[in-house]
Image (cartoon, rainbow, N blue to C red; front, side, top):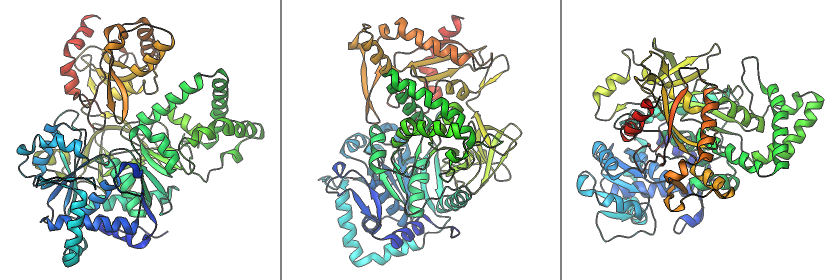
Length: 639
């Protein structure tokens, strides 16, 4: 295989577009977009990108100036991203779920001249604060049918039309822009979630992304993780975050793979079967929910449940033959598990695979090879179950500052409970206090307008301080203990990692969310949000009365979910006993000082809308501690 070359994002885009021409670059649901057929070839995508880029130049977009993108994932998101890059300018990604004040902060901090916005509904929200964003000259709605009489607003088609006129006489100006982009030029600014404070603008250069891609492709070649132009990825995690931006869109741009776009987070399973991706990105919560749903489905039939349990027992014996002496599992397609098994077990395994495991794999489509999992760790037990099913979930670790994964499990040697080895062109070391420090490929340029934060982020010899406490085993695999700032220091002197406590509930059908408390206290307590939807189903099935008028629903990621219930609901013995059993089971696996001594069951779900979650669904510690301070104080008075 040809050695990967260090390229700017612009070079990578044009190399794929010019090489692949009529091959499909993007697939999507045409019903969601005005006047679209559902596909773009590489040639068609190149034309659209050039039209948008030339449109921006016609507006006077100068080199290294900034434009925001505030939209859910779509083919247009990728078009706009590439166009901004090819103008030698800088994209600023904004989650469409952010509050107006958070959007104002990002626009003003980054001094965006233009803002691409997903739809007219988002435009209404932004319009209320335009007078507080003085740098913003024009808002472009990413809808080919949108029209406006307001000179500050325009639709995507109007920009495309401007671009075509500009290109007819000045295409050379656009061409000169993208051909003269240098590796040290800024490519994008992404704002961190800010779980403990205000978000920071992370500056990634073309070198950041280019060097990470070179390192990634070399690492992939070592461990049978090839991505080629014949592959298909599916984008559904926010492109505003570096994970899908790099491991989905970025890899596809570099390698010429096809990008498909899920209709919404609510349709992921159906979309996987429609688009049949070979790889995609996921987060542990998705893996957990798929498993919980699978278990609940099986439990509805005694026969199915018995067959499922029998198959898992067979799979537990068979999957051992994937494992090496270090506890690593070979999940590569080339590994023929059946051929490694003793005759009797082989017969049982083939039957279990035919009647159970193959049907579970079919949920992921008919071409699926592996999924990258990040943002938090998956419980080793759940990961092994997926390996039993023959589903390769590859855990990795990275951050916005590292421009995607710098630690990754090799596909041929996945180790449950560990995020992987130093990978993708990175170097790593552990500081005296256990903090992971990384260097080499991918590193960010610095934080926008925050020189003091830059100084604190790097060691004197140039290594980036990740803020994560880690442990490394004898084989070089890293396990994340927790965020350095998140570690709970008990008054007794013991340290507790909230992720360990909260990870105990990953596959619980009864506990939806959990927040751990204990700083400067004598013991651990938690705030528990029950799985309202599951308990509603249980109560209805068992004819348990409750006040349905107190239920409040909200649309979260395209799914209607119950976000609030009445006191009678959370106080019912059926719910309280189920939660108590989950707490007891978790405590049996925790050290005595880590055990949950008391807890409160909350009536309301933590949501981004209410300010308790970041766009990546991490709990905002200071917000929750302040909001529930009285509840927390009562937990410590009662014990």
